[in-house]
Image 1 (cartoon, one colour):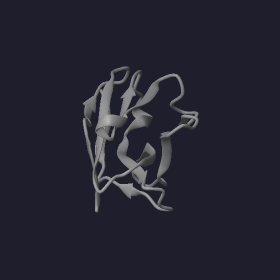
Image 2 (image 1 turned 90 degrees about the horizontal axis):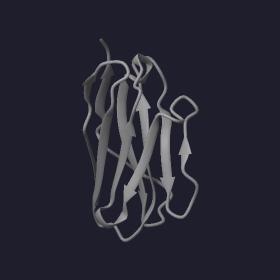
Image 3 (image 1 turned 45 degrees about the horizontal axis):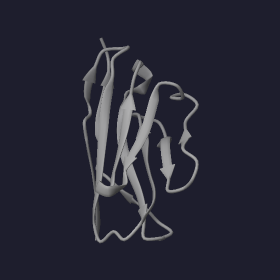
Image 4 (image 1 turned 120 degrees about the vertical axis):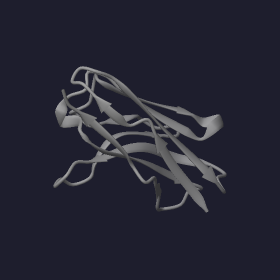
Length: 117
């Protein structure tokens, strides 16, 4: 079984920064993709950033230039550095990991990010 756990959410003022972390553990032989999604109340889940192994990093247009995704392959971890946060970034942020060449991925439980003064 594979487990995905996020950490690092919280309350931050507009213009502030947060760093989210996500660890994938369990029976992992290879990681295909790790990434971050978010879901705000009343809205659909949307991709924030994804980082496939050996592929091109993708960002939502709304976060380009403000958010940076990175991975530590040795630790099966992915990070999301979020700068210049805006109230519209408020959402539950969920980590996603597709591993072992499977066609489906694993989700974390989510971490709340609230941007408010």
